[in-house]
Image (cartoon, rainbow, N blue to C red):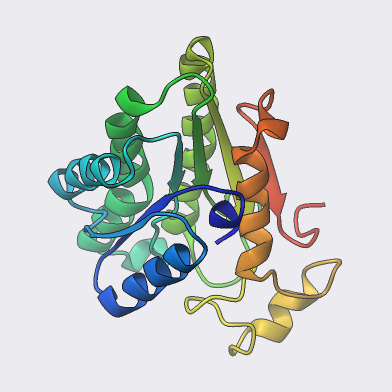
Length: 223
């Protein structure tokens, strides 16, 4: 909601949780901005392209793209199935690439591409996550390449890398939460609002000269 509070209209995608997505849209509209919830599978190239077109139609244009979809699957490299490898690559790597590809024609000067990665791209801890973290590392090169390619169009591309964050995927009261807190100098989980604050900054005029940048919102995990 940080973008909404700063005056942005927002379209979001969901795969299965229509009720939750519609509740977010209601909250957006209560703040006086336009909102749209679009059903799309981030592993489906056709759905990705359609979702961008629907977002542009609903909002009347596109200034900011936030690549936020992702899945986490953990296993040893010896036991990773081909289908699980394909699933991770489809959502975590191909998804942001195709979404950005579809969005670029709609982004003008001052446009923003902001991708959400993971601090695990630089420090691998915990459960066997070789393939998962590989997909997150790919987003670093993707962002730097985009910065080079889109810079002449005055479009910036940046990456936000959260550490342990209190979400449904990794709750702050989960089985490994105490151990995860012990890894960070600040000794706590991030809240979604902490990640949103970094995104809001990168979307703002204050970040107009930042591109190809990685912002770690990780409590000091990578310090």
